[in-house]
Length: 465
Image (cartoon, rainbow, N blue to C red; front, top):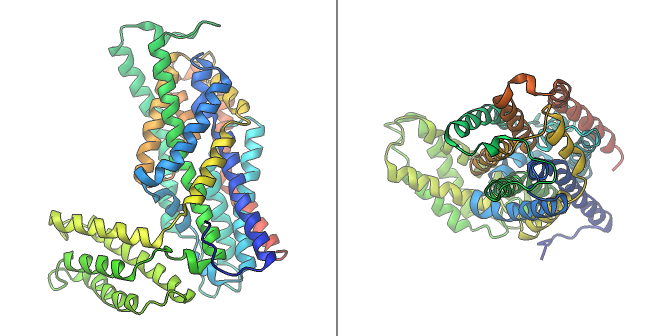
């Protein structure tokens, strides 16, 4: 069921169990920390009672994680995996690798719980990225790191940009959408605060439940993948023979994919910049034909080279006037997906495990953050239009990010959407300055605090485990 074919000693099996449990705990905390992003608006507009709202949100988070592999792929999970130098991580002492993974998770959990306890909406994604950067930096300075590898800064910058710009996008789009609603809707009830004890009109209630469903589903599709990515790091650390490449790795299919890519590329005489890629394809195809499925080092090397080829080929697709033939571009894109499937394998049980952890976590501990979003961002009660606008912007932003394989913060996108909708109603004076400052301060502190925390934990645990 689990695909564990390697013989692990009892202490290592116990450590494996503890590490997997810690991944699930992170997703559990992620669930109850981020629940408010989906349910605050339906609760504060009277569209759903708290318990049904939270249970429904938990089920949709569960469904979002399960669906991510079918509709969005595992791009977000792979972004998480790629932040750390997996090949070097696996090559070092196993106990040090375990210390690294546990430090990332424990550091992220501590900061998530601390901000939740204070009722401050804070991004679990932001927290996780900071923890990964912290242990990656410490690892890069260790004497046993003879290859002098550490954080994958190119991927870190891309992820940082998505985390940086998504709140600004959510804030501005909420203002635009509120402006459009005011011009186009004749029923002005939607722009009024809910009357205490009175249910909203049926159509408004339907819209708000739908947006709650979408935010929950897309939160699962994006944040659930982060947990899957962490589990993949764990599995590749403990069981590199099984998980460095897909257990269903087919040398013939991969060789055929590389051959089709090679044929689809223009001649190097015409475009000298593709010469390096062509040469790499030739040597890699030779090595794949000699692949030994029981050789760990060879499988790790193949994984690394396949990912490099994928990155180089994707870079060629981005350069204007090199690959202009539509059929060739289509062929290359399709064959690159074959490479992804053979270098990335999240087992079904891992997807289900993360889905359950996130879904159950969503049903617990939601109230602190809900109160902040529903009562403390604005100076008055949230209107129907403001709630629907914030969630519609959040769900569309997160869904787009998941389809592009970009990690984003559900918390930051939705809280900035709430702020934007309220500013559109009555200007900046409609916001509670103290709450906005607390959220902004948490946003600023998250990276440095989690980097230091996880880095210190790694420095300590590597000498204990």
